[in-house]
Structure formats: C-alpha cells, structure tokens
Length: 99
Image (cartoon, rainbow, N blue to C red; front, side, top):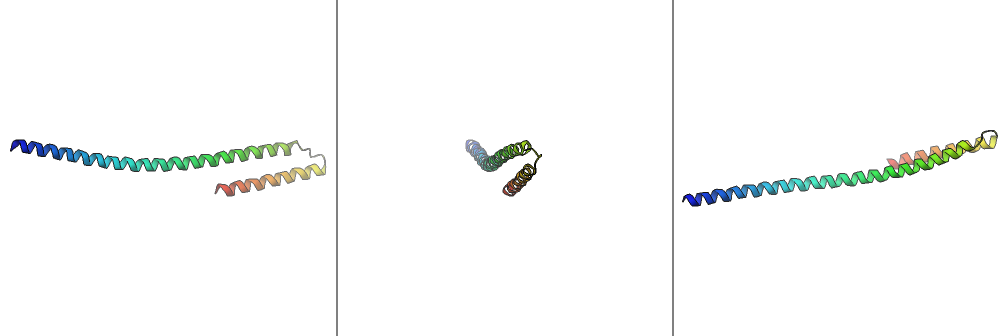
C-alpha cells in the first residue's frame, strides 16, 4: 500500500508540473502575440518616419532652390514667395497624412 501511495504522489506531482507548464506556455504565447503586434506597429511607424525624412529632404532641396533665387528683381521675389507657399502646402499635406 505504501508503494501505491508513492506512485499516486508522483503522478499528482507530475500532473501539477504539467498543468504549470501548460499555464506558462499559454502566458508565453500571449506575450509573443503582444510582442509581434508591437513589432508590426514599430515597423509601420518606421516606414512613416522614413517617408517623412524623404519629404523633409525634398523640402530642403526646394528651400535651397528658393534661397538661390536672388530677390533683386520683383519676379524673383514673387518666385520665392510662390515656392514658400508650395513648401507650406507640402507641410500641411505631410501633417495631414501623419494623422
């Protein structure tokens, strides 16, 4: 009878350990899904930031062009103002797309 009791205790101990492992596995699966979701969000944010960087680089190029324009004549001043208006409009579009 003592032998049967020892076997029962060992089985109960194994059963407890298996339940504990199943519980830990489920917790790890949940954590993995959460991390995968976070990775996806971060990748999306990174792509958006890369697009923003490209847009700012283009804006910088346009600003350089606008600065090169001499404001000695009225047509050049008008051209500079027009380019600045375009830059502001592009900034608005970028802000709108970021939302």
